[in-house]
Image (cartoon, rainbow, N blue to C red; front, top):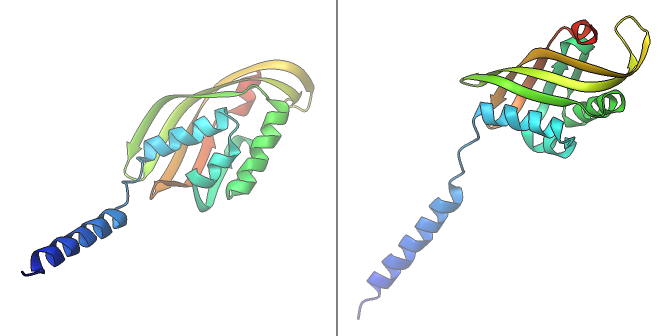
Length: 156
């Protein structure tokens, strides 16, 4: 009796298993990645930055003159923000995705204690304002994330 059918069947099983192992799940959309990044901020989950940000990724907050490279720098920025706005909430109100670029419109609310834009100390001041962010996402990871807003308007 020929062993050829058994060998062929076994070979087919090995090839099929190898193909299954090599297949990677599709990368998340840029919109999903950017929204997950905002969720991580709202949940104070800086550990998520390691999975959401590409190595060497940059986060810029233009209004606060912050430019951080890598998850560690962004985690430090988050900690500084939590110290003055412990209850912040970042709510995305609109998202547009075009290829690897994502634009987000959002509102920000918090209770702030610290210096206002003029240097005057305020305590438990309710802040609210709107802004936008632009993200560049490649291979399911944030390569660049930049926030734009008028910080002084939050204090009016």
